[in-house]
Image (cartoon, rainbow, N blue to C red; front, side, top):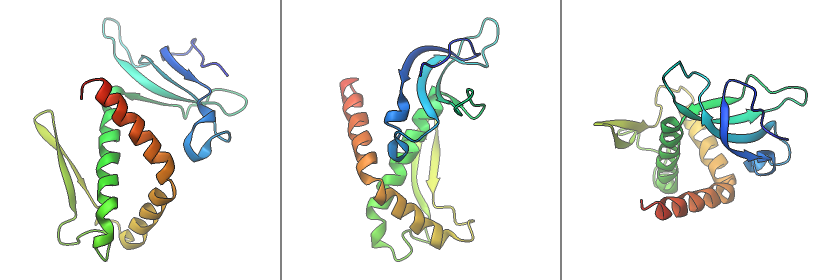
Length: 159
């Protein structure tokens, strides 16, 4: 299925048939494509680019399609890497984190920092952190493949 080009987001680079590789949802997902293009929120004289996950309900393109500025996508990738690093060593803590120091990492960005920490305000954090650890473990092969591809791409870009 081809991504539409007549809607407000204007695709420039596309990955059609994303449904074939959508992680554990592969071949059974409404996420049909990815695109990099002109953002739907562009105003006259101002051009932003965004990436979009295109979702199709079987009848029409979904309003639940997600469009994100590129920096937010990279921030999410950094955030996921930080969480993954934590869970690789979390077995050392009985609660899978240090309740006295729930801060996992501060990642410097734009003269400030993204603070990554365990959400101790979650009243079920003990149960939920185990569920997240188990889900990451279950999807380790899918995620590891993508981390390796991302690392290779970053090296090829000189990072």
